Image 1 (cartoon, rainbow, N blue to C red):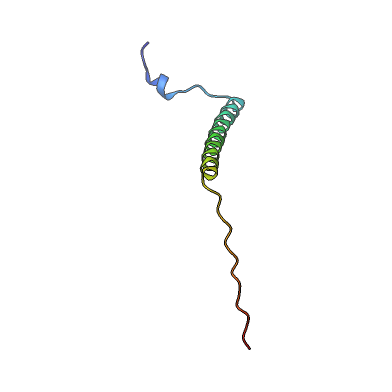
Image 2: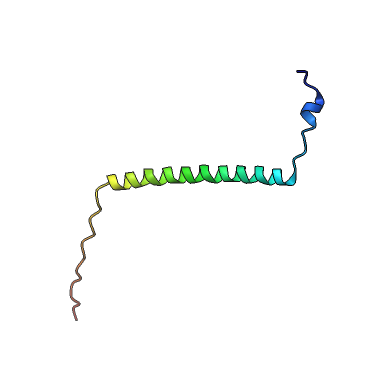
Length: 68
């Protein structure tokens, strides 16, 4: 097939509905990939947190009675 400038510079016009569908599908793909990355990060951080020993609560300091 011979490539002409018409092939490269005159893309077929998309209907407004087709443009909207394309935009929607791209946006959904982006959102799904971000959600997957967020879920993966959450699982990783949860595993790291559960692997650490539980922190001990700080000991209460007692005050010396006031002199006076």
